[in-house]
Picture (spheres, rainbow, N blue to C red):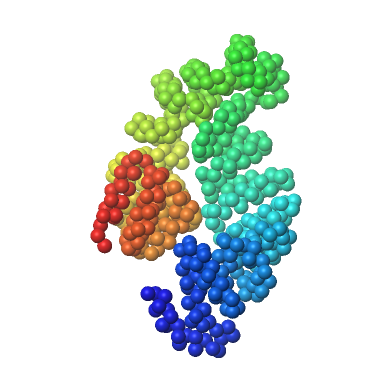
Length: 548
């Protein structure tokens, strides 16, 4: 019906278009619409018939905007004979030029494809796909400096986008290969700031800092890698403990010249764990105060999968003297296959003897929270907050309390905690965001919510979780179109975030797009917890059965 309507409307257009240099006639428009209909309906034979009918009389070149992608998908060789006559019409159309370059590459004309892309980049530095392809061309041609220049040109001419993280990652690799250590570190830091769940980014960050001798940052990098990496990585787990041992050595040269330690480490490298442990026990017997020997023992025990003995060793040391290295090493065991229950029991035993040790409390709390033991964590958090004198640390402890209050729907306690944080540290943006979210979700004070999120976004304009709060405010104000634009951006950055997907689905539903709303909820189900899935199922059932 739509197609017939356009034909009826088209008759006068063909006449009025006679003054144009390339008039569009109704039969051409009809052919183009039929070709497009079958093309996007995945019926290539029918689409080919209409496209050929359209172009057999050298129709207006504007219609090639559909024909070129069709040929690229079905028969890229057929593009080659017509490339030259398309230059004028599509010289500044990046998407078409990318298709043409791909066809040239597939035909073996690599040089011409590269020349086309590099020339195109000069006028389209903000186009991400083009910039990435041109940088890869420079890398393949062994021109790392030129590749760096391409990446910098793109980043300097583009607005800051979260998916620019891949360019910073590539820049870090290139700068590292060119011995530009500071530039490499700056780039990889930007990479993980923009995408904290990028495992390869954390790994490169850790390696760079280890090479620079920044062991604390390296430990943080390897630990973060293990947290976001989808599977266990025994090699990195062992390296993490080994690095912790290295961190505590007075100096590499002094320690490794000791016969017993050097011999034990050599046996460890050969996977002779039993013999390595024997040598380390000799070291400990000769020098019971040797921290490096004790930590090396823990490393060997973990490699042997003697997790209970590894925990017992550190707990015994901490009971005698709750030094930071023992408490830190016990926390590092969480990144290994050591059962979390053993580690938590270890901290409980330490805190019985050292109840006011804030470092032990915070390490223990971190594991409790990671294991979602919120009932056990909350009283300890409140105790730690009361004992802490550093206002910045107090703010962060209270923020963890606020997250628990939010998850357990303790609205009054949540608000008290967040307002207290504002007294301690007004620039702690996650707390300001959560308070804005709370005001928006309850609808109590949308004006205050907007004021808070304005402050947050002034510091972090591209953070998807903060933008989600702004979207919720727009939703509550019934500005659904604005909310949708923000949420689609957030979902593109965080496609597995259940909260963002849920907000997106509700906004789509309000705008009358029920089918897409249900599809979005079904996507969210793949990443939801058991409790979240029950909520999503309720919405899906309600929306799917509701009559139009």
